[in-house]
Length: 378
Image (cartoon, rainbow, N blue to C red; front, side, top):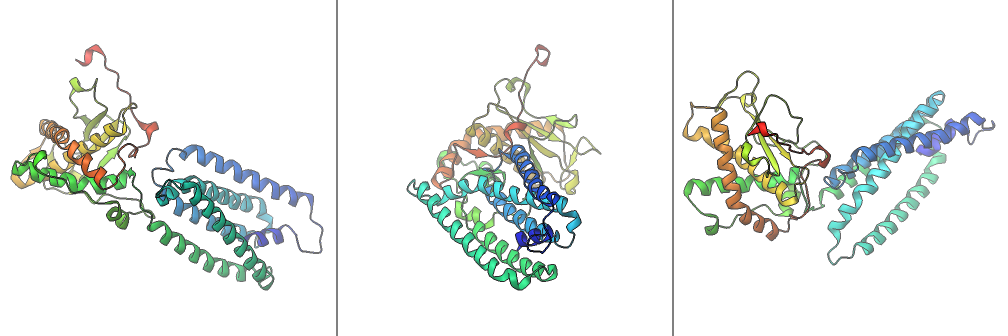
């Protein structure tokens, strides 16, 4: 229906001959669409594997937007080039984004290294769906004609059905790689258990950590709306460094550390009143070294989660106290010790539940830092 609307907009199917300008506009709209798709793919090329479910659904939404814009050309034929170029850009973005994130999703379907067989089934199903859709569109097209007010509601109903099917299909995908959202859903209950064991004096060798399974995380994973942590203390990964960040990683550890921890204090004060409103809390900042391995990234993330949890435990023992720079440094050192003690136990628990620990997607690798120390630093 979207294609029919654009063809009618340039004069195909009418008694008038198609002017050369219309043919040129038709070619240009595809060219512009390709350029936009290439630019978008270049910008986000390293992130498709980190959150394929989100990108898969966004690809479906872009495809429906492309249809909507293309149909509007029938109402405003004088704006054919900008509207069709925008629709073509959305269409190419949808196709490229969907193609880029599908392999990671199809990988989760493979049970006996049969990814090729899964891709064969995908190609057959896609071709069959396209042929069926084209046949149905060809049958309905003559009934709708060039009446945009008939085409638009019909297309909207089909778009809603398509997006609903895409949402239901995407929601059941179980990803075993750790993105920022999945890692936080897994590490947060583990950090809470570690802190409880620390208070009771339980050693890592005496207990086995219980982490959420892949299925548990899949049932609660958010991929339509942006993920927002439920923890009251915010945490940023690889944020821009500013003068307001208080470095918590000791200077003598910088030359060998694969990550840095800092706290961004509230602007109104360099101390934090425990138990106050959320805006008065410090924000934990975590940076990864450019050479950090997957194990380094997970250990750094665990230490940051533990630091955040230790900050929340402070009001229990000291309601009226204030956490200053020295207190934050002490808590960071305590989080480091707990992380080193409990990481082997947590790693075994992750592998037991099927989580991949050799490949992680917790940050954008092009935003990592490189540490250079001068003699004056010491």
